[in-house]
Amino acid sequence: MPINQSCEDNTLSDPSKSDLEALQQRIDAQREARRAKTQDEPRSAWSLGMRYGSEFFAGVFVGSALGFIVDLVAGSGPWGLVIGTMLGFVSGTLNVVRAAKEINSEAGGES
Amino acid sequence: MADTNPIKQFEVHEVFQFEAFGLNLAFTNSSFFMVLTTLMTIVLFTVAMGSRATVPNRAQSVAEIIYGFVADMLRSTAGSDALRFFPFVFTLFIFILVANMLGMFPYFPAPGWHSFTITSHIIVTAALAMMVWLTVLVYGLFKNGPKFFKLFVPSGVPMYILPFVTLIEIISFISRPISHSVRLFANMLAGHILLKVFAGFIVMLAGALGAAGYLVGILPFAMTLALTALEFLVAFLQAYVFAILTCIYLSDALHPGH
Image (cartoon, rainbow over all chains, first blue to last red; front, side, top):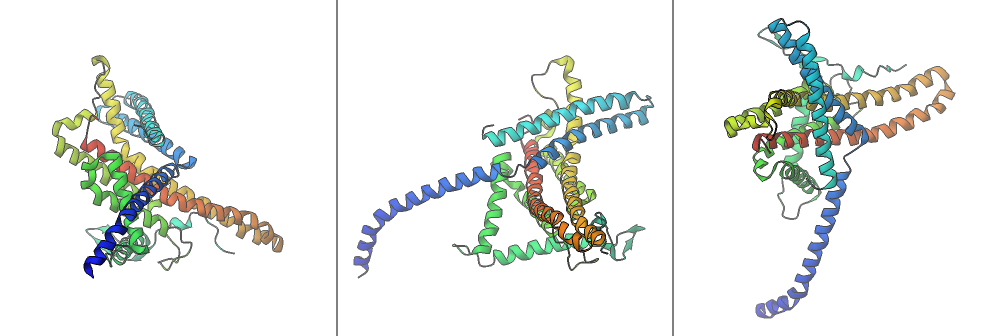
């Protein structure tokens, strides 16, 4: 009885194996499609704008804060604040460019 | 007439007093929601993973999907060796996600009978962002030693411009926890205010116009409904964005200089 059953299993397992493989392929394709979709989905314009805005704001804020601290410590008049704010603008722009690069590479699927 | 103040939802009340070393460490409704978030996560995951079945039931597959989602995110943005930070990133993601979702309840059996979004207070998000930033700094220095500072000195830059570029890179690095925390906080704050403003219009219209006000109030009600759906999306999205940025920053700690 057991031999018989295993024989039957063997004859059954061949077509079912290819079936399983086909199923696995279908699942993988579905999974890829879903992954692509979910990667696209979490990008509302609102959150994108918020992202860029906060990146830029943070750069300017930190730059001017550092300049202000330098002024306080060194007593160098308004120059630390002026230069710090300008550097802050530059690094804020850098932040925005980096964020844009990240978002583009995520959306395009290539790095 | 009901209270239509849109920022009343962000009030912090003390539930019971507690003072130590001259500091006011009272247990507030904010603390209540933090504890609730943690407990809910623990209980939900314990129950969901309780059976540990090979073929998962619904609850278990939800838990497994969340686990796989965070693991995929970490692996694709920071590489396989970043998986040692998986517990950290997973905890952050789940904490923010559950806290944001709890904040979506208009009424809640909590102190003050209103829900409270802990991520709408910048002190909470700043603490979370500083935790990430300090982890990157300490682990990066510990693992790479002085090579970590390559992060601030990009290669292939002419000598005469290098100090300038390094200064900008340092400012950019320091600005990370600020943009990281401001984004989450501002999204939650703005969204919840918007929601309450539109909901307040209904009450104001009904108070001012009577029966006609209820009829016209359908318009702001439709808006509130749509915004609620949007807020659910934002609640998930911001937890996702916070976690993915954590991954990107951790990747800098693991591989400075790219």
